Picture 1 (cartoon, rainbow, N blue to C red):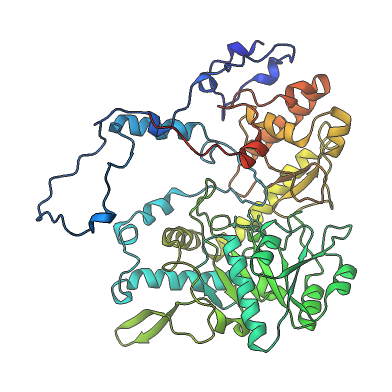
Picture 2 (picture 1 turned 60 degrees about the vertical axis):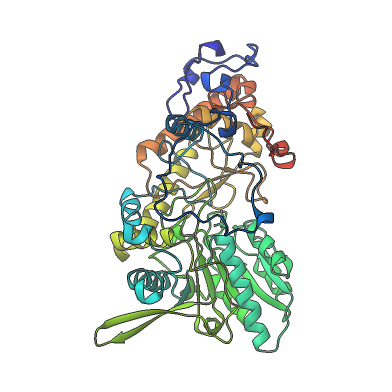
Length: 528
Ligand SMILES: Cc1ncc(COP(=O)(O)O)c(C=O)c1O
């Protein structure tokens, strides 16, 4: 098929490409094969014309004061803002959004990210004026409803984690990690101990060691055993009394639940260290088991993964933490309190706490995330949350079973174990050796089939890793279609690996120099 006949952006649709093989001998036009590829993308600053407006302010109905800013702080020139009409403005951003892959139009099995459906009901309740228009500086006495919601969310999250004290402040999982390590330090120092090292397994997400460094600790790596869990013998050699904490996620990023978790907790506590639970994988166990019951002292949740706050594209997120009694005196301030009176419960924010690590951010956190997650918890109830995690595990195992079939399994074997929790890691090294395509090529070719690729090259200990997390909100038909697409790409690579090596063909932009984009970003844009 000539690439010039691809005249639509087929992203998220069935491109039918596997029926009409694209031969690598046919050069793809440098000018682009699809209208989106050909289109010159302009920034909003390059559009419009002088004097054009999307909005006119009404004339002021209060006296104009011209003397409020000192002369030396006043602008000499108008700010260089875009000057566009409302239709130009709307089209600009709608068209930009069409160039993105999004969860609302396609399967997004990005491992370790839990890209589950975000129910629309949550958007509706979050947009209610009482939530959306509440000012963060409102006096607590006039924000009782919001404080009650936050207090109830804390109680519900505490129940899910099996730990009684919760702070909603952190804005992301990694921010929760930082909070957890600051709490760990406060706890040890309060007992007169100055510990300097934190253990992280080699399967850990990159934010774990990064947080350790940011909190001023030294990272000590712990190995992984043949079953994909913590190497207990290695842990025993490293668990000394200068260790402040072990950070762990269970199930880990290989999608494996560590059956030795109680022994691990015992070892960590035997030297007085804390056990930190990276809750990014909570979607596998919520309602079934609790980190607090496994022996963890501090937990973070990613509301933007497990509890349906939308994510991707940079935020806003929310990474609350839960802690045990002994860590609670150090929790960030303010804390929300509830006092029962004859007129009903009264909620307040208490700032003045002697041992607190202080404030982690402005205001109380990303309130819209709290409303969405609370709506999720209320609409599912405890049985629904358990059902969600069980279905997430079932879906992952169904997809894994499909991918073990002939035509796929021999090229993309499971890296560890036989079954998985909510996600699994495939080893792409056989595919690379036998078919001459890398995990990156497979990932890019999946885009032509309308699927967002799984996470690639993570966790680092698996060569050519492909980390797949389907989540509970996908149907069997979607999982089957994804498995069929992988089989088709591998079949195609057997005949001509160049096709995958040059993919994607149908996306708004073709293969990017991702390292160059990260290392040499072009961040200045000339004005029109
Ligand atoms: C296992 C794991 N831990 C921690 C994080 C960090 O969470 P966040 O992106 O909310 O900072 C992630 C994020 O993907 C993760 O997958």
